Length: 276
Image (cartoon, rainbow, N blue to C red; front, side, top):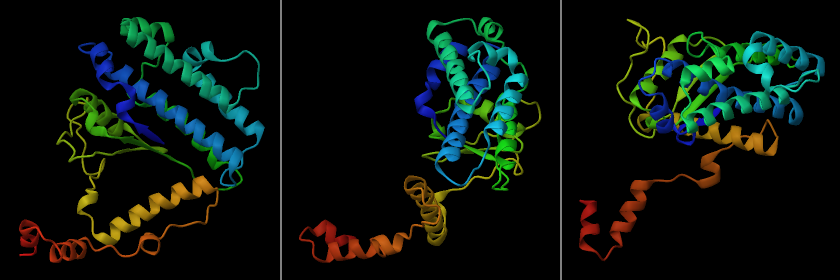
């Protein structure tokens, strides 16, 4: 599941919730609402368009009914009256819940009033998303494909997170458990922030691993890039066995060699001096 953080108005959320004791709960719930929508979308697409996931209508209806029953107070007001409920209904409900939070932010509604009006969960941060994901993973894992499913939530451009928001996300990471895990992607070196909202419970080595892609060995980086490209091509072509071989496609690129050849033939003295 892919979230592009700059698209969700982080600064506007911060301005609205700044100094409010419900900041962590609302911000985490908002992130949960966003990524669970995307997870439901992905499952729907896999059910319809691929053989990776095989789910009967009865299994789908039962799963959605369980999710709604578990979060009846905040989901039922947005659901259509007729049954059985489908994953599309759940997606529509989560979308309306997001719109309500967006509207409250834009109009400066009191956060506590919003929580009471929408009956938003009052549990620990990240619990709303995890509860929904647990039911969805059970639905997928019980399918006839006999796979064990889990959700990786990628938050791209995480350098856009403000310091307190970063602590909230750290707390979500610290409290996360199967079938949910988080991947934070930075366009620069990540800040040295390991603190959470939990006293004496910072992120440790067991909670996170920082990977610097620009420091990876060339072979490791090639494998990573080819893996990402292969997954995207497979999804686009709907051919699960297609793989991408970058060296076959583009050849072996030697940047040092390119620069050396350019410097050899250069008329500019400064460029020729690069060789020395």
